[in-house]
Length: 230
Ligand code: CA
Figure 1 (cartoon, rainbow, N blue to C red):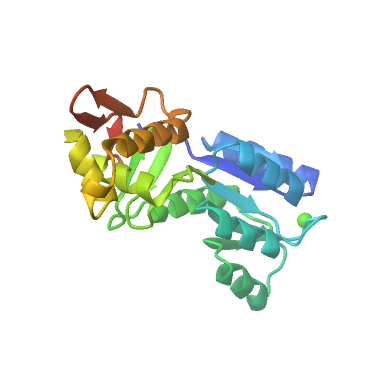
Figure 2: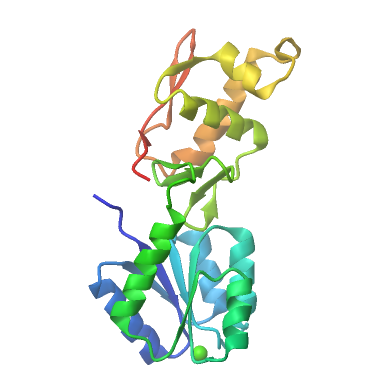
């Protein structure tokens, strides 16, 4: 089963916002709504979001600036829906990282199709992404994201995670994990592997049903709940 796509509608006109929200919910998306840029930021901090449907004319901040900020902070999909029909506005939005641009009035069915298309492109083959709990791990971008939220792994933590992923569910010894984080393993202590693993658990655990990493006593660690459906 494919996971439900989580959409955030950012639109200051209440009737338009309501209509978009109802239409997208009816199309099978999980929809939240925000009436201005501040509400959008607050929701993105709290709720995992896959795609933002963004109006440009917002009361508290121009949508272009908001789009640029969102692009800097995370990997959320971004579809602009606006009255601004000029090529300049379209170019500006695409240049700050919008995935798509639709001019109002929008056809709801088309918007739903564009959202699905953005999701497909973001999961395109060639990028090595996989899923751990709600996290999407991108090995090329070295990112671990739940919607717009990042796990914030340090370099060493990501290297350990990547080594466990490479083992494809197999057990990796602590010594082996140590060599992935230290060029001169004898300089480091095996305890540092345990510390990094416990930090990874803390950072990823809340978005996983079970502990993402299993301890194999006296030997090493192994990754749980790894899914390559992406
Ligand atoms: Ca507006």
